[in-house]
Image 1 (cartoon, rainbow, N blue to C red):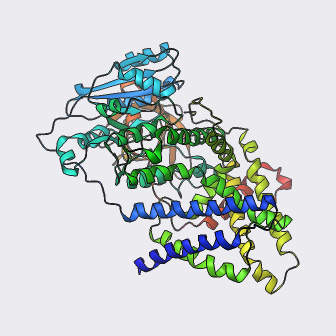
Image 2 (cartoon, rainbow, N blue to C red):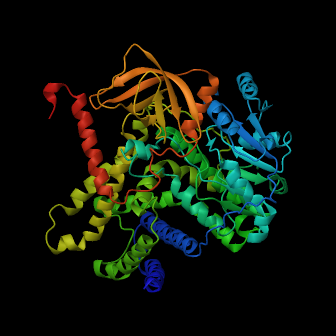
Image 3 (cartoon, rainbow, N blue to C red):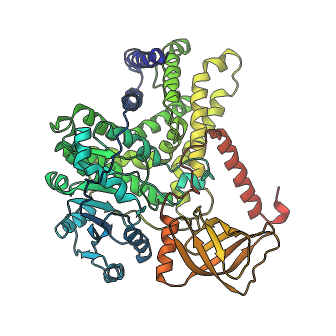
Length: 637
């Protein structure tokens, strides 16, 4: 049955696209309608093509074997390069601290380098505090690439690990990744490994999780690529380097010409250049480090604009389609990554096509209702069935459309400009701090708010005064407008979400012992941060407000001895204590307790029981509650 509907989906989709090309383009309409109609058809081609590339990637997937470490295997020296540009000492402190806790058979073989391309004195002092190497660089003209290329001159190990300033590795990072480079593993898979990429992971809520009150419902928006798509890419020896949490074979970097300086996405291009030199690349399934994801929409848009422009630059630099060093499968995967950035133009076309028809009778598809049903519905339903069959635990089609619509107004123009040669080569580092609300977030909402308003007006105007068969014949446009309405409304709600003014909380498996309190059992941890801890006290147990308590925070691997005093207490005997570290060593252990593993407070999979409509109604209710709280008591409804 699967073969039947997979084949049927492909055949019906091809027939639909051919029919659209030959019989539905508005060639008898105005010039602008013709151009719009052609662009809409091209967008449909790309949308269906990228869907089938993903289907092909999934159906041909074979899991990458896990290395088996034997007593004969020797763990080589590893250089850990931590890149910093303008990040704070506190942020780098956490990352360096975690690197000093990395497990390895011989820790003397781990060489940590703080690579500072601003030659700041405070960074040099920080490196000295942790007894690691410091490489300063003044007048760097090539951003992260220049920083790492400079650092490679002063480091010499056969393996090189790269980390962004905010990316905190887990203890098992090296012992998990390094065995992929053993000769025994290369013989087993018949490939020479150039680099191993572990998934990008984040310990704070992204803008979708936070602003849509979905921090228990959906995983981070980047998880779909990092934990699924890139793992599938590895099946064809073409996992993409995503800039951090990675270990390279040094000779592969050298043979590829070092970190490229002619693109904004040096990570993607370096990985592809290593592949074109004959090396394989692997992406593992489990995160081995976590960092900070941007929390304000302005930073998110700037980050994605850089990625979009860089991907187009790198595709040109690689001469992708004629690159003889890449296999056809690698070219297809990388070209699909390039096409992804054009999906945002397609999303804008899909949104405005029914609006223009409903408001101005602007026709971009020339057909009638019954013929459209015959050619469109079979392929649409079969492709929907296929997508459900290979559905991800991380995202679905609806979420993909909402996220595309959120980004689209700010990515369409940069993609077009970069493609026609109007470049932006300035590398802007994404903010690595978890800040409060940015007042400009509301201004960024203007394009999506306009689209929402136009969609509502179009729905009313198009259906006003229609009865019976008129409603049926207009049902395709109405369906299209309603689909866009849901997507646009949720995209708008992302900009007016819950206030962001708190430190991320971490679920930690461990317990607490308070020395001055005699209890029959240790206390479990509700949540933990670097500055406070929440625990549940047994009934009848109280803490004094004025007293400072000696406390041990214990997990399976670590124990941090701190002092704490009562900050908050509720009727359910849940209390929050402010933490003060006894000394720097215990503070470092506390940080390691917090960051050594994925933040379990955030979901790793999508909650399939919560639909888009559930989330939409939940968001509307939350905002009504917030509005009622903000109104004077006499005006509350």
